[in-house]
Image (cartoon, rainbow, N blue to C red; front, side, top):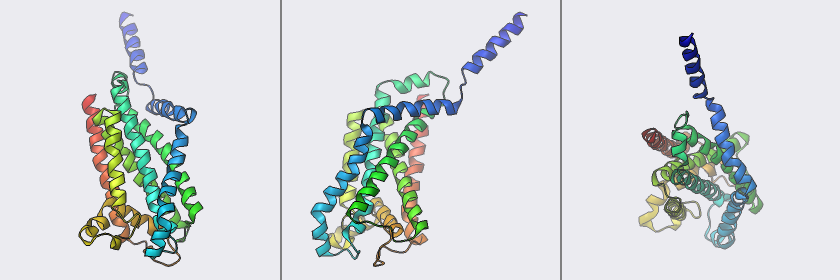
Length: 277
């Protein structure tokens, strides 16, 4: 009888120690999304792309129209950089959130629970995807307001949205790993502000590569932000046909950059979380 009772207690303990993984993920995801909605953080995700669009378009529209981009309008040319900046803003928020969870000791408390070590990261990424969708919708509305339109058909429009989401998730995953490793919200935010700014300015997002000094043009053309911009422009299309054709040779570099960011980020994410556990 004692043996049966012991076996029953062990079974009950084991059952309580292994709650449903999906339930854990969902609870942690809601923990991140609900405060973002109730505290107005989502408003920032909406206002950021609007600010980016106004900051880029108003001072540069006449100048770049005069200098020439080959596109039907400057709005059609600069649309990808607004999308990429919205993704970068989401990534900075993701890094801040990951670093905050680390420095507050929340991740250590999760480690003491019967929970897979990657569930907190998965929940943060789900919340990041939620914010990313809101940011991209705001970015699309903003660039549409200044004159951007899809001209490459339904399939390429879907491809445009899919590539934007892929890039945003890659940025967020990388930023989450950086925030987890840095363990300092302030240092992480400062660390991630400059790269998007520098790479954005030294890219074909705001001006064609031919308008840069000759010695830096190779870097401008081949760095990831420019490759992402080339892919998004081709998928968005243009009435003058200067956006480029959607071919594997054009789309492979941006897809490889996104895949590389995801693979490297996943490696460090798994390493950091499993090592801590």
